[in-house]
Amino acid sequence: MDATKTLIELVARVDFRQLPGDVVEKTKISILDWFICCLAGSALPQAKKAFAALSGMSKGASTIFGFHVKVSPYTASLINGISGHSLEMDDIDKKSVVHPGVVVIPSAIAIAEEMEAEGSNLIESVVAGYEVVLRLGECLGRDHYTKFHSTATCGVFGSTAASGKLLGLNDEQMEWAFGNAGSFATGLWQFIEGGGETKPLHAGKASSEGILVSLLAAKRYSGPKGIIEGEKGLCTVMSEHPDYDTLRKAGFRIMDVSFKLYPSCRHTHAAIDAALALREQVDEIQSVEIYTYKEAIQIAGFRNPSTPFEGKFSVPYCVAIALLDGNVRPEQFDVSNLGKTEVRKILARTVLKEKKEFSMAFPDRWMSEVVVNNTLSRLIEFPKGDPENPARIEDLWVKYEGMLRYAGVDADLTTIIDFFTTLEKRTMDELGELVY
Image (cartoon, rainbow, N blue to C red):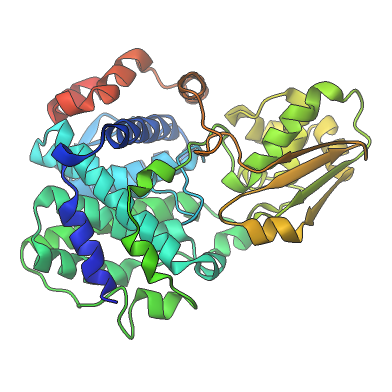
């Protein structure tokens, strides 16, 4: 199969005028969701450090959101990508195990601002980027995810698709851009064991490098052919069993993407939902058993978290605060909350175990079961926000209000929502006015 050409053809076929209405609506909400994640994330240390280090590198027409500074598209997408992933509330796709918004949308908005594009052009490019990154992540499969952070490895191709679409690359130029994007398809999981602030940097780098290769291709800077399926290409090197048929699936994959309601790793969310459902039935917590799938334990299995990052990647901690507080919010991952006596008591009484049938169901279903005091149990097959268990619009509005409040970001949420829900009628000039 000529997988690279299949993706190029997919990008070329995306046309705003032919997009179904539900796809347009889902895309607009996806862009809004990322934008709020970015604004709130801009107040966090990772974004502030990135801004201090990188914002002086360039001048241009693309906005670093939350900082009121205009720079080049490359620099804007790098910093905005970091901001958008820092709170761990950006969207996620089950089958590809990819966070699509934080790699596709920063680059699409940055290029759209530079080009003074219409809102409809932005929507079109985001759809193209999502289709590429999600199909590619699903194609690479589960064994790829166990070794690589798929948001980073696949993300650069989604960013390239979105950027290249806006820049009007022809098929040959898009193949060059994809070819060179393959050289930036990296993302190691060592930050899970070794710590650091690497995870949001993965998103920012994937987004910005997609812009880099697209701008080069626009000036006829060539790249290798067959980067997806070639003998030394992405799927051959990074996947044991690539499923190329996923690249040709009918429909729009953006419709399968899940929204997150809690500021923690998505692998914790089914267990959080189960704990919240049980909370009203529990007076005193004597024991907690959490059954989940292998990947959840590998990625989010910290038993005694001591940092905010470890807390966000700890199924036991997330269950403990859900049982104690009846909610899971950004402030509960502050260092001051991690060591609370009540939390530590529950963690000491908690066991985390793999359930084989849950592991077999992954990634189609991200399942968890929580058992409290050996008698009360709740199984969640699809966490809130999955297409099978969708978040209500009201849930998202509450999420956005809480994020901006936590981050201390002074923004008019009503105006922002109105802008993005009518995006096809807007221009990028209006976006600049919105954030200033």
